[in-house]
Length: 58
Image 1 (cartoon, rainbow, N blue to C red):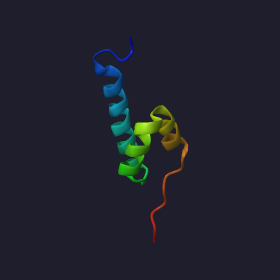
Image 2 (image 1 turned 120 degrees about the vertical axis):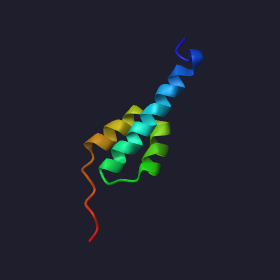
Image 3 (image 1 turned 180 degrees about the vertical axis):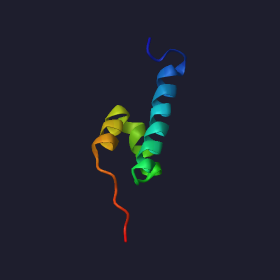
Image 4 (image 1 turned 90 degrees about the vertical axis):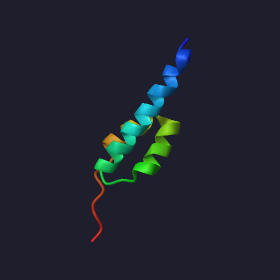
């Protein structure tokens, strides 16, 4: 079964942390994207990758 030994949850949690770092590198809030990633997982990764880099405010 996929939930055996909690490996599914460990993988999902790891992906959410990677997404937070990726979002921060593109000038976005890591905390917000971490929360989004907990619910959307790979879809959030796709969104982070396709969204343009945030331009800094003056």
